[in-house]
Image (cartoon, rainbow, N blue to C red; front, side, top):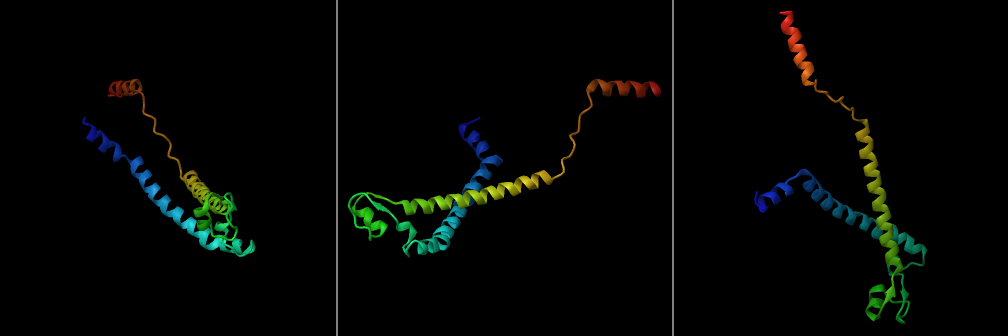
Length: 138
């Protein structure tokens, strides 16, 4: 078998295709959660903390003025952008919680499915003995 044929066989397995679909959907879902956090959740929290954009909270490490936007402060040197970190952390927590709920639902649906009893094949010697018995009855 050539390497190209082996690769084609590998790439067409169900698990690889499922994984690719999962990665694509996960990327799109990550953008939705990012927008939810940055556009819906963080503005009210920023309002509570003084009306600034929460992602612009930072500690200057290079003598920058505190009133600058984060992008401007980064141009002047290193900053510790703890507000941006907290925003990303909140993104992760929300995304992890939603994925947990999805997996929990999937596990519940799997448990509710009736499990068909496994069909046990009759051993060959029993089959042979039954054939002999039936032949003697005739």
